[in-house]
Amino acid sequence: MADSKIKLTKADRFKAFLRSYFLLASFNYERMQNGGVAYTLIPAIKKLYQTKEERAAALKRHLEFFNTQPFMANRLIQGEFSSLMFG
Image (tube, rainbow, N blue to C red):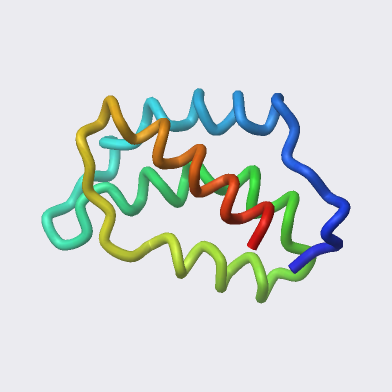
């Protein structure tokens, strides 16, 4: 992971919030909303991980099964931001 001094800003969280509106754009019956979650987290992953391999591994982790009520997704994604920042 990148240097621990890198922090996600309020602007980064706002970008994720805007991207979260596309959460159901790639809905599928195998992994539900995983594509939307991965799309939402891309700005944070780009900022927190330096190498292409680290970024690919992080995206792959977030392409697992994810399903929730869409109105609750923002809260869950913000929690995921915290776990990305603090390990």
